[in-house]
Image 1 (tube, one colour):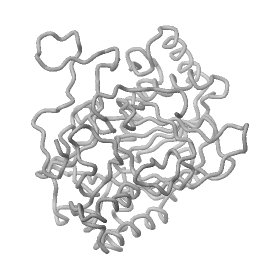
Image 2: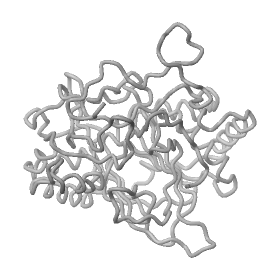
Image 3: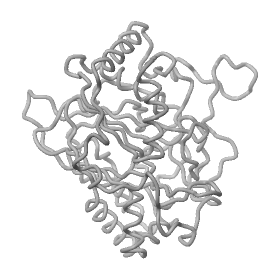
Length: 408
């Protein structure tokens, strides 16, 4: 089935049921491949009936999701949480129990990674602040050098299960991703995912509700993090460049799949950049954006298959990036730091970097993409899979989840 603007699913095609459920004729999931019984739903175009004209969008966004960098720049106590000795011990004990049980890392969940003290804070307080508040936090002090990659990954993924359901990040099913320079050519943007290079990443969001980054090793220089409230960016654009904001709400943008497609899917998605949440009362503004996935489609536009970027769209690309840069909060991730942020209303970027010379380890971040279905407090998004547990992400056919301990 081609995924276009008019695509509509009346039933989730990736809905999977436990092999223990014999009451349904639906396809049964192989729990040896999908240990938690869930499958990532993947990328989709928005449902056309839930798209809105520019006139329906608010003139200004207010509330907890709107913040300015100066509110946090000199006040790390507002967004930094250093793990206490007791919290590290709780994570350590839970990780040791999980490893001893022999459960595959792709089967980790709240049920088999119990955090009596941290768990309620993560699920109730932090999760709400990520989804409905400022949208980011920086944890410090996970002893990754002492623990090594395996135990660190278990603790990290276990912590993440209290914030959402992990989803696949690429065509190979990686649910534990690795941001690391593998020597791929960053100029081949129609083929290469930039996180596998040392090139600059412009402001963007990932295909999940929440993204996590755990720093395993730092670069010699660069590789620093910037983030910004996309709702603050929206407000500034509404005042300074409403023409650009209007362009970003029009459903005539094409986003590249870069070959990560299931059978029958098109190589791109026709969509918009800013959406309204799918609710009648006070719908929030949602952003879905990555300039690399927009600029990489010349292989189709050059052949006349899709239209090239218009002058208005090129201007919007430039203005959106420059505005985000101007308003952003800068931070540096040290070894043992974990950054979580919400893709619903936070844009993030990374500076280019240079690694230490061998045999020193290369810069290495472990990455999580986490989904939060609307029935569990997630945003009501204009996609057919809005209430699927593992909504979003990148799913190619029946590729099972994979959790490697290093980049491949």
